[in-house]
Each structure stands twice: as structure tokens, then as C-alpha cells.
Length: 292
Image 1 (cartoon, rainbow, N blue to C red):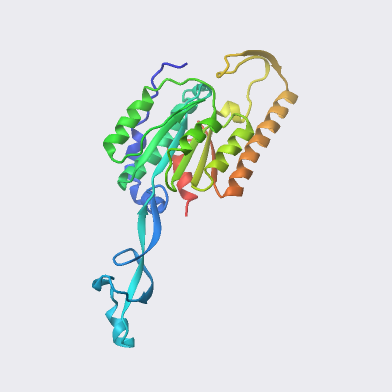
Image 2 (image 1 turned 135 degrees about the vertical axis):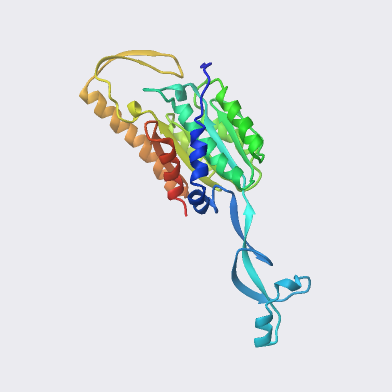
């Protein structure tokens, strides 16, 4: 279990503030928690008309339409409806790996905090819960004070346990009472059936999966006699990393990633992969650029 403090770069939030005018346009219907619903009265854009019914607000009547038709019509608008954002962050031992300086957990935490920050700017609710083989469920709240408290909690969090996404999402699913935006950030280096089960479990929601890997995991760089350590089981493996070993590793990893991607495509979820050497702000903006 790791006892070290995980530092979150505050400059990331300064950059988000600097580029708010870009970010807000791209996330106004997603990360900020908005949903469109039909509503008669003040809203965003007029999408049509219907006949006036007793109880409708008089200010919604289109008097120009009445002058033309001598019938009362009310304007219908598209209006925002709040959507809670639930972020599930992998805090298992495997996320403590760092080939260079930044651990996968530190990188994943920056992404999670970035998503939460954008939601907070529109005063919508969010929760960042951490999981390994169990899950620590946080209650969805709103406000910058809650965001700062959440960041402090994540900075002091002790990583531990094995990744258990199936069990964790099964528990978390009981706490989600309405259709939500769910973001799962993990290295997703566990049994494919467990990952697929988690994806299908949340397929009714707006679902985003973000896989965070170290560059040495994405492209195996070691060669020759090597000592490999499984961070979750602490098992040591002395082996010789040959070219054929590296080819087989790459083939199995690609197959694993492709199957996750296929299931996401099947249910309409989004799937992103980032290595920790990608500038965090670039990775974050890439997820936004893909959103409509």
C-alpha cells in the first residue's frame, strides 16, 4: 500500500480558467451536466409552437402568431436540465506505477479533477469515488469548496488492493438513482469479462472510459534479463524479455484494448487512451474536442 502524497498541479486549473471560453462551449451539453427537455416558456432556442392550454403562462403566448391566425399558440423552447456527474477513479496498487515521474494515479486524478472543475463552474453536482476491489462512494454535491475538499482527499489517499471494477461498479450502481454522466478512469488491466460487465451495467447512462497507462506499459521498452513486479500481488518475475516476448505482449495488449473499445462502441460509450507522458491539458482537451 502506498503512503505517499499525490500532488495535483494547480497550474492545470489556471489553464482551464484561461481557456474557459473554449471549454464551456464544448461541454455545455455534457460535462457541465446539461440535458435538453421540452418546456413552454423561457428557455434557450425556440423549437416550435403548440396550441395554448389552460394553465400555460401568458408570457409564452406568441402574439404575432395570434395576429395571423386568431388562435393562441405558445412557444416551445429547449431548456437545460441538470445531470449529475459521477467519476470513478481506480485507486488500486497498479495505479501507483510510474516509469518516469508521474504515476498513473496522479495523472488520472488530474483528469478527474478537471472534469469535476468544469461541472463545478456551472454549479452542478459531481462526485469522485475511488475503487480497488472495494469502492469508497462519495456523495454527489456541488460547489468549489467541495471540489477543494475532494482534491485534498485524493492527494492524501493511500492506494491499495487489486482492481475489481465489476464488484465496485455493482455497488456504485445502487447509489445512482437517475440517468447520469459516468466517467471511469483506470488502467483497465484486469479481466475483460469484468470490464465488459461494468460497461454494460452503466450503458443506460452517458458513459466515458479513460484508460491511463505508463509509456513503458503501452510500448514495452525493457529488453534482456529483467525483473518484473506485479504491484497488486507483489509477485516478482525474473524473465528474459526477447523480441518475440515483446511482440506477444504487444499483441495481447492491443487485443485487450480493442475488445474494450468494441464494447464501448456497441453501447455508445466513449473510450480514450492516454499515456502519462501526454501533457495533461492536451489529454483533457482531446476528450472535449470529441464531444458534440
